[in-house]
Amino acid sequence: MQNEKRDQLVVSKKTYKKSNELINAMGKGTALSQKLFAIGMQNIKVDETNNVVATIYGTELRKMFKSSSGSLYEHIEALCDRQIKGATIFDWNLLMKDKENGKIEAHQVVTDASFKNGTLTLRYNNSLTDKIVNLQKDYTVLSLADTLSLKSVYSLRLYEMLKSAYDYQRAVTKMQGEMVFEYKLTELKLELGIINSGGSKEIKTELEKEFPDYDRIDELAEKTGQTKYKEYKIFNRNVLSKAKEELNKKTSLQVDYEPIKNGRKTEGIRFFVTKKDAEAVEKTAEVAVNKDEILDDLIDLMHDDFKLREIRELAELAEYDYDKIKKSYDYMNSYSSPVDVPIAFMKDCIKNEYYNNKTTKFRPKSSNSFNNFEQRNDYDFEELEKKLLDN
DNA sequence: AAGGGTGATGGCCGTGGCTG
DNA sequence: CAGCCACGGCCATCACCCTT
Image (cartoon, rainbow, N blue to C red; front, side, top):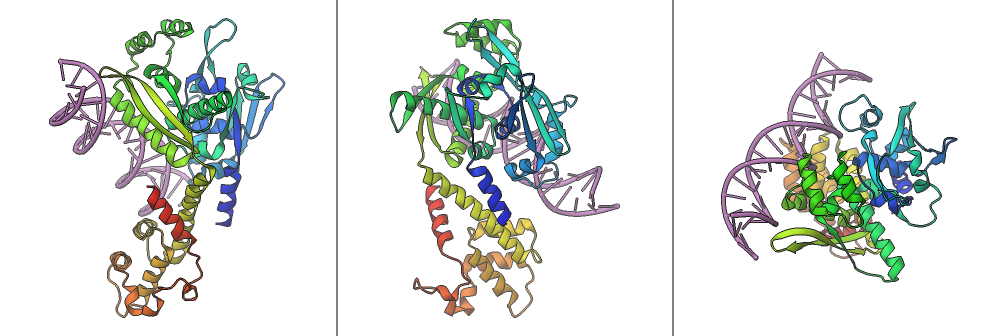
């Protein structure tokens, strides 16, 4: 458990830089490939052919993903395997506008990937090298912990885009507080990789214009069979509201949005972004860690009598109040007759606090009745209460 | 009548538990 | 320890209803 805490610490303070050009490039990638990119930034070097090479050790991967499942390595391997059908890291492509000639070019981000002897090596396209290393300006500092905590690839992309836009705006206007960003729906879908050029020349030429006709791109995309999230309501439900919820819960950004309407039809999205104060974020993170810790303690305590699933259920019921569960458990073990259905007994006991009947002297009324408790400071209660109020 | 919200349904896939 | 299977979560789609 000590180790887990430290692992948490290893991730929590780390940041990585990503150039705004990369962030705002349109492209498709999986959540895992984005995360691997973020982790890879911790340890990069440029090889003799001017490619950026990132190496990550398997043990680090486990720490980062807080994964203990045996299949993590398998998944990484599959991701690196060109032969495998389905998404691999090589499917990660970016559309970028060349600054000089204004042409849109598609770049494969990762050109080479191997996972050998527990070490993952990623080689990035050398046309991206100057967008990855030695960033002097036009970059955004992103929190590794924030990035890794996000599940949906859309949340991840939105986090990067909005953080980038926010920091940029703040640097330019020297203003703090809430800021507003507007995107056309199609523009947003392009950025999120929901629609892409799909090799279509027409879409590419449209994008090369200074003011692309997004309606036309929309039509063209539909013609090439890209109908994903065609209806706004679905896009809203599965992408926007999910991302908003996730960002607000897990990252340093506080996000809200509203549709920009033309008559009935939604044509764009207006985002409102503020930064949560750093303290608030750490608080919620801490509660999450405490939950895991409490669960671990409970497993140590009760794994002889209950399955993991049951313990989790009890923990939820008791709102991760370790004392409550321990008292119920002790009460059950000291019960005069054998208990038929332990799980039901425990549930009832937690709900109705039976243990107080016998052990009235344990009833803490005054705040200095600490000594009657197994030493466990009341810090957890405060945190939990805060968390409850937040939700 | 079209756009948008919400719930139900079914397919797909990753995870974790169970068994040999 | 490996392999299989069940479960749950995610996502797309449909159906139905409400708003504009």
